[in-house]
Amino acid sequence: MRGEDVLIPSLTQHDVPRWMRALRIWPYLMHVVLLVTLYVGTAKLGLSLHAVGGFATAVWPPTGLALVALVFGGYRLWPGIALGAYLVNVWAGAPLLVAAGMALGNTFEALLGAAFLMWVVRFRPALDRLRDVAGLVGAAILSTLVSATVGVTSGYLGGVIAADVYSEAWWTWWLGDMNGDLVVGALLLTWGTRPRVILSSRPIIEGSGLLLTVVTLGLLVFTRSLATDIIDFSYLIFPVLIWAALRFGPPGASAATAVVSSLAIWGTAHGGGPFVGGTFHESVLALQTFMSIVAGTVLVLAAVVAERKRAEDHLKAAHRDKEVLLQEVHHRVKNNLQVISSLLSLQAGYIKDPRGQAMFAACGYRIHSMALIYHSLYQSESMAQIDFGAFLQALSRDLFHASAIDAERIRLVASVDNIVLTIDTAVPCALLAHELISNCLKHAFPHGQAGHIGVMFRRQPDGKLQLQVRDDGVGLPEAVSPHTVPSFGLQLVDIIREQLGANLDLQRDPGTTVTITFAELTHQTKS
Image (spheres, rainbow, N blue to C red):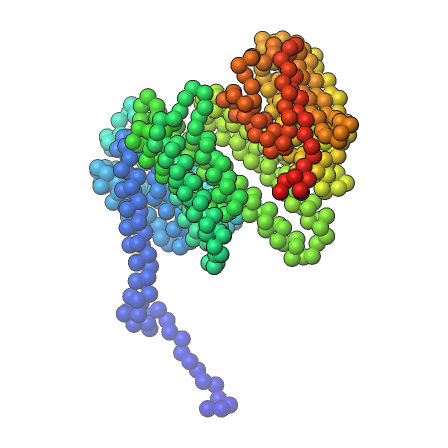
């Protein structure tokens, strides 16, 4: 009817037929039932391992599942978590009231973690930003304190967890829930937001090779007793995880971490691998510490790579100048390397073994050396070259400061030319200098002995470069050389020497003098 207002009445809640209202609630109920089913199913997997006090296990997949469910589905799914946790604890043998208390802790844990991510971090589930990974790690550490405390206390008050295992159960529960967030949660988050793309044959072949390598190396490390007093073979798994992070980003990093964690859990549960200790509890704590370090470090690296790629794409899309592009990328890399160094230092605080602490500290210093390269590059006039002589003096001072060396006891004698190197040559050369100087500071002057450390860098008449580090300390034993010693640092020196195609000359008397001669890398020599 033209020219007349046609009134269309709006329907209120009471006007909607009951059968239509019922249809609206069915999808929600189906999601809750699915969540309960998945929660109970993954909990059965966790409880299949030896549980401290009957309830605390090495890894608890439902924690990661519950967090992801609330992130993707909203807080309204909390009844599914509560009911699933309640059924699991009753099934594990807890009295009804105790099971309710444990389920309350599991539910608040998930709600607190999701609220922290969504309101504090402004979380993006793809984990392709450093802030998102840091947020997930923070949620995994903080929210799981609630579940561990409420759950173990409920079990203790209900008489199902003895007083003499309270501390042991609490630590296992907390670390198990934390790894559930970092391993299972990260896997579900990254793959749940991964865009659908048509892959070419090359990524498929490389991904298949990566998976085969991860599984093979994981079985080799974690199902056989390979640990010795000299080398911890568990660190052999880091190169393939770095490969996954660099080439396949957060989805590849989370998937590789999940595979490694599964193999590590399975091997340790069956008495194999480097984490088997005097008791099962000692094995579990060593395993959980390793898993948290692996997951946190690899996710950070993957996020750094994703941020770098995103920065490059953004700057290229904006048609920025090439020099500005390189400057921005290198600045981000330098900052992110410093973050990784700080994270390694933080994780080292959770390790009780002095040898493990020393290994993580050494890794942190190596990363700091690379960060110093990018800092020097950022300050240089050319983004393609660096004054390596000035860098070498700064590196030496940093290493003396980091080792808390008395400058009056051990004196640094530097004789370096202001030679400009490309970034391709500067990075491996910086790592060489770092290892050689650090080795002198650690071993050349024991028991407060005084002496000198000399650092020389110059270009020879034939155009080759020569790096020399010498000391007048106790000297290197005859049985020790970079080719045979099982020290990671000296092995790294030998690997980089091969990469540079360098010659290494070792003089032992007096003190120790290492001279490395090499030609500067070019695009032709690299290829």
